[in-house]
Length: 298
Image (cartoon, rainbow, N blue to C red; front, top):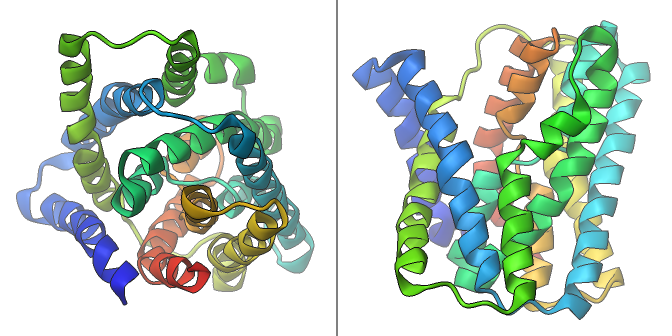
């Protein structure tokens, strides 16, 4: 109950974003612009600021990253099973496959900050930044036959990867951020989570019927929101994670899919409508499942 109440303000921001889109009639241009602003400016600033100033325990960080990678591999394996379980077109399967393992960084950072403050932000930033390349490799690889995209170019331009790497390099260098720079980045970071969660809510859309039907959609949702957190509990204990890193690994596994999955499916000629349905349904369901998993893990 305490965990649910702690996360309630963040979930309310998501619902507010959905309501604002309906009430204010700002349109796709406004929300698309806000999403880009958060993705390219605010969240990279938050990641850099958190990692550059963090006191990272590298001995524990390695098991955290290994846990995260195995969690994603579990999602990929279980997601692939849907190809044989359900009647889905190849393009629809390739599009929805990524919803079994991709994660919403905005929600992840908000949850980590709420539970553990700056150390939680740094740990979640490190984990999500490190998992972006394998997530993109798997998603683009599955969709590659249906469209064209240069994978390494996509990764090199990914602002979350850039923000993570830059923050880690600054951390390793031992340099101290000048006070004006730290304050400037802090202002940007303060806006990141609020605007990011509003953008998540504005993107919620449950129109139509997903490709493969509701049975296939339920499979992908169950993999992402139930199977992966269960695997995370076992893996985190196997690798000896405790405290902040244990909670971050569990929260990472329980995150819904990010809107970037829809963008990728659209850009590569995939089934964007089905992906949008899964993202929306998963985000709403995660408002219940995510606090339950975090409470269960404690």
